[in-house]
Image (cartoon, rainbow, N blue to C red; front, top):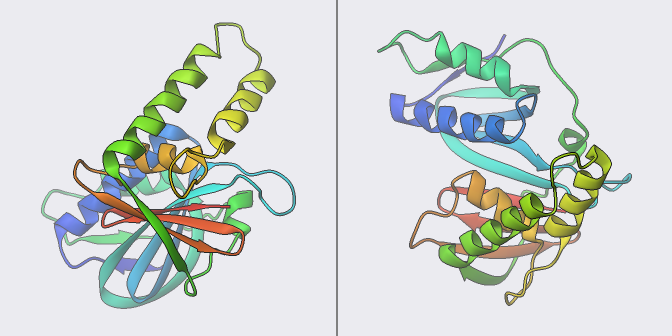
Length: 211
């Protein structure tokens, strides 16, 4: 089992918050913990993609420092991480033992590029939030009681796959991910990058990767 040692309790608390937000979207969801040296990249799936290329996939990424070098690349259930964090005594060393049981959601097989991104524009946090809230309302209003799972899934795909009217445009699902994961606090600016099939929306709080 790999241990991830964080520099302080606040950094571990940031991971706890990130996991809780992701779990609110999908109680049975997963998190990919990719540690290399003294950096941890934590990925979560926000919206599933379709087809062999995963078109429409939206991921959330939070990068955080580690106090000691570690090497790991595992995908585990969010609930397993939550359970371990909940069992940590108050004042304990900020160390997370990675859960041993791995899972294999389709999005974890995708490999967003780490370099070679091209900056293509920026959008303010208020605009990102407004886009997300509009989409949430649209999904809620179009999903009346009794609506079948297939119909709801199709509606979500249409709403979150639609391009925004911003310059440059990006999938509305990216705004949704940034909003629900807390990546766009008031006053922040989200910078947009592109690389092949991928688009990235980045703020100091985290990154959203869209395919």
